[in-house]
Image 1 (cartoon, rainbow, N blue to C red):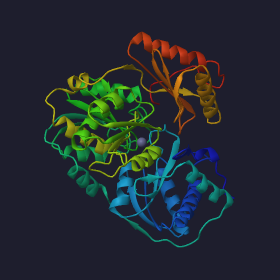
Image 2: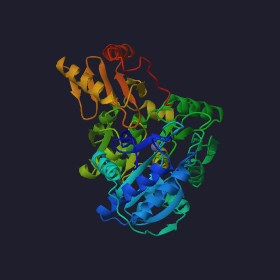
Image 3: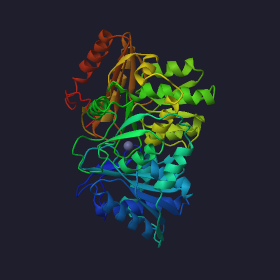
Image 4: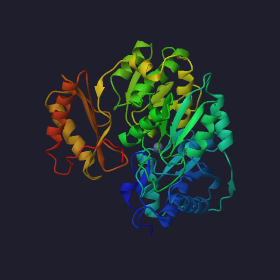
Length: 464
Ligand SMILES: [Zn+2]
């Protein structure tokens, strides 16, 4: 009887600790069987399967493949890959099924899988529950799938480079934080003709320096420092599985994704006037303002790559971007989030400018805002706390956008509280026109959150 912890089946990914009662070789075999059965029900008979460079990933990958094959699924083994390389391989190998072993940027000790049943489509909550139910009831399909191996890295690089019009050369700091992206992304960026200064680009699954997460200050402050020391034009940081991009300017300042998305959306709107651009509930008001000013239609949606991909298709939007650094291009691309492609499009945009990045950014609308803040709680409590706060703010007469947590508008600016989809934490962010205003919004949220014993009093922006 396979025992699987139900909390691992999250909103749009499966994540768990490497442990006897969560993720291990046996549970990965059953996840392979459950997902293989689910694919058969969807009339999908082949899946590409790859893994990131975590300590347990290669062994988990082998066991997931065994489960898929015994469910009658044919497997194309693409080996060690970044998450976007898996999505890309679905198109390249004309295969609708996808299983990637990765915990993205979660800390050491975690692993997980991303599951796809169609091009640029990863499973949402109800479908993940269906996979869980198949496993819990052991209603497995049986069969004898075939397996073959494919090397995709060079074809992937060639395809991405052909889709970005880069006419200038730069000196670029590249930090992959010892994650999976290092070797392939450095190779691709060098082929643009720019000079690449490598930082922590060797793969080391112990993450000896910090968690490779461009949504946190630990990785971004270091990227800034290295960019200045090496006199680079700017710096790129990629997360552990390569689907997210971080950016710093030549002075070492972090340009949080909601500000560099302004530049990327201008690039897209030039080619597609009036296009829809999607972003998540965490972004600055500066982004919708700038999209409107450039003739686009701003659309706010839920945080999370699966939600955003589904919304992109529904709205026929040209691009989407999340505060966490997931950027999705439909224009010139396939509509999935790829940190390398976002970096190449940034080079395309910067090819059209003569000023240093800090000056370009200074010319965009500006608010005072915090980075993403993480506050520890539990997986059981996080949704209840957010529901209670949403109700309380509404009852007190605040304007609340509640498509994903609560984005609360006050006289001093807005504040956001939402439950993280992947970790037992609450995610907060605040923004105002002034520093004093920002303090007032933070104070309001602090007061309300302090009433919950299950919520930590410690607010953390490091990204660990
Ligand atoms: Zn990621």
